Figure 1 (cartoon, rainbow, N blue to C red):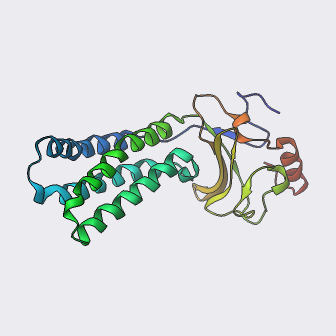
Figure 2 (figure 1 turned 90 degrees about the horizontal axis):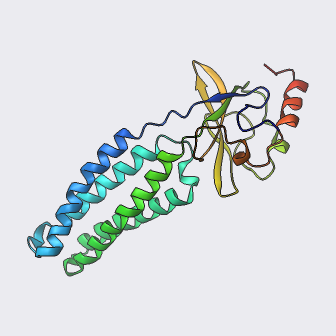
Figure 3 (figure 1 turned 45 degrees about the horizontal axis):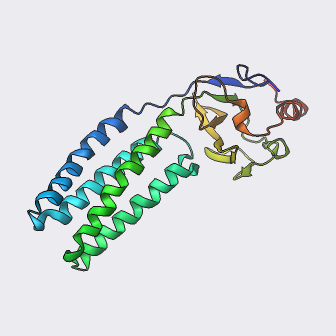
Length: 224
């Protein structure tokens, strides 16, 4: 196996292209209505604005979530991100449900759910933004199937090239994903791990048999 600084045969390193500046900006704006909610709790004023404020805050938090998740393929495979998504969805249903059923006396439930989403969203987005390890990329003919037996422990979604998730794994506590993408009208395979650092995290991709993969590609006459 290659070292953590080298790409396997046929692959090249691809720098992490995520930029969470927009996510940070939206999150900072989302904290503004959160601050008003805290003031409403302290001073117990303007009861008619409690549910509208809760719904506006949920909307801002959901927007923050999607600006972050949208930058990483299969981000919902990560436990922190999935837990945050579940909490946001539950909160949105709770706030709308209480409002729709006219249960205004339970406004504090909506406040508790919304405020509880803030730290979970921070943890999820902080984790995603810190996963800066580079990935791998290689050209791939769309008619050639991925050698599934070279990916032990991975869960296959599609063995043939498709634009989007093709396989994923969660080994050693790190989520890795194999997906298809277009690079200047050329189909490529990309492999990324939600890992920290600036070096290539080959060990976090699980037990991929890189040599067998290279041999399989050469046998098909597709090696670059």
